[in-house]
Image (cartoon, rainbow, N blue to C red):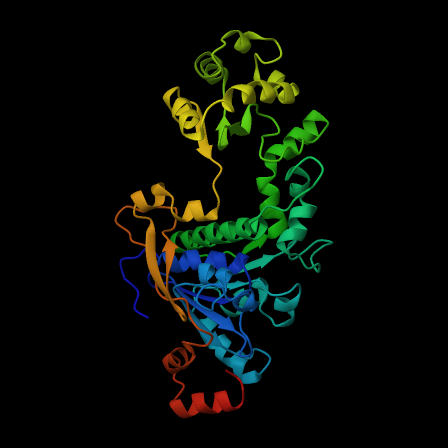
Length: 396
């Protein structure tokens, strides 16, 4: 697999023992920037996310999203030969990422402290549910559980139904912080020569994203209301009916509210009504405010309502579905789609959202299980006979 040497992370080698979402999301973003990511998988089945579904030409949608541009190496890490191979990889790697089950890394001497004693220049990154220390260190954590423990589910959904966010938001948050933490550690190593370990917990990553409702609850005495697609502390904000559909709109300040009342509702007096004159009053009288607005918006078609909101500078959008997103004119108009190969055929993939001028992200194939095992081992002086013997003994 040849990497463009002009990519920002070309020359950086990452070894990862990863499963599911959080750690693979972090390492895929490193691969996007040119890092060599060697994904170590079990010979029997590999990353369990490979088997979540078979919807993308026979491959799992999560796996295709998270694993392009990586190399798959199968290793039985419970065998002596498997560990020997892993240690050779780590000795020449820049970064090691793992999200093994609680306590597993320490039992295998793959915790950050042990690794840095053996390889002082290696940057270890641990991704866990609740951290490597503390009373919940040994507790398993999956995205839904962390959404519940963090209080996010108490804020999401309609008033009577606490709901999970429809994507793996805790995993994604942790993956983002692992990615940025690794980049920071690489910078520190480059400028000081010191390799710093990175640790990210799903619970703490999502906890950071809970900052606003946490402050609101601690200092306001009650947590924000669960208001579905609306906003707990801003009104009007959310879906409103048109004659043939639904339109989303948001008022962010009193200037917009005055403009909205004057030009869209056609009644400037509403803007100065004490029940609606400022945002906190509109939140307190949300139902009445929404009813008043809906009586006007439901008289207009979706097309006409969107045009009117655009004309008078009111932020708005459509209530789309995933299929609408896939065909969104903003993505096609900005040339955001690229092709990437998978074991089952070519698929579309979006460019990473951080655009670096003069840099085109890497889009190498999504690997089949063990696709790169022979080639990687040959780089470490294993002969074809050695590799054959390892395969017979189920080490690889």
